[in-house]
Length: 413
View 1: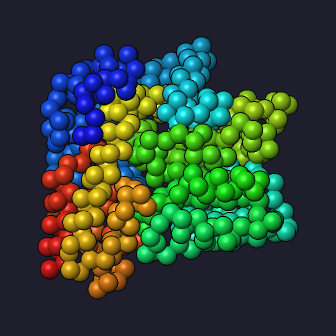
View 2: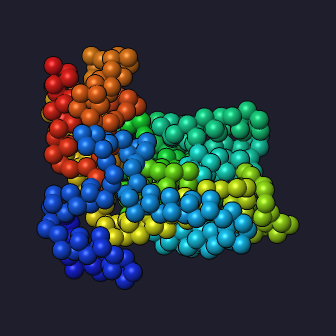
View 3: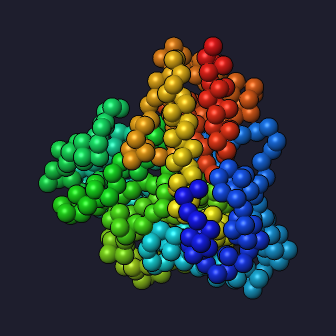
């Protein structure tokens, strides 16, 4: 653990410090016993070890119970007077998310997931024949193929930048993207951390380069929200997307779309429904423009505030340091196996919590079988994405990471 009890207590709000969990953590010993207490906050089934945070994280009980409580309340009285309080709860979630990301509440829209947020940007920026959009080839499909679909309709050009697997520095990556930008480039849309390689792009440097050229910079942060300590203002992106159900460990069916205030008026909404009025098109309030989505999961949207409180209780710096330590230990263990080739960079500055390795002797069906055996024989839930993808988070222990390494070794023979 990277901080002292004093730093821990100084890093959370007064209301959260009074919670039972905060008091227990403040009194806990450091190291693995501290994180064992954290793991105890999750309703994990004995013998099952989730290591697929890149896809879906469990929520701590405090979040899932809050969702259930709110759903029961709504189901018990679906009248408009009773449901009106969910508007206040949503405002609280939006405010806390904004604080968590270092921006203002007016710049935050709570949507369904990263895909919806990415496609809002994809469809919302004016583009036509002669314009260019520059992507990273490792972008997620909703920030990759989605641009191809729109280009077919509107006639602009999509260019992709490839980053070599053996990249050595951030500067090398920046130069690759710089070479792709031209006077015709209107959008740079990148994924912060790849879900297929685990490589991390130097987002701050790339966004600065785009903004210097008047290029709209969009950042898909699906593999970063809830893992990294983020300040979107400092990163300098024009927009950012993420899902609550991944590293943020929040409710399902809730995502975040940040749009820098100066850019909100120029982005068209993807959905227009109840709440829209003649002033919505030119508003500089993201929620009023991008949240006219019809009926929503009121319990999930409201419980996002509880998820933010949970992260504050753990300490955002602690979460990042712990997850990085788990991923580093996993990479080091897998890299030491004879039949394994690491895909994710070993350098934490060029990677994140997503750890991907390949076994040259295994074709795709055999890799899928390996992932199945990991779960059925050892209880370790990973994925066959880009190879063997294991993504540990704060509910995992160092012992579980080492167990995963031993399991892979045994299965490879």
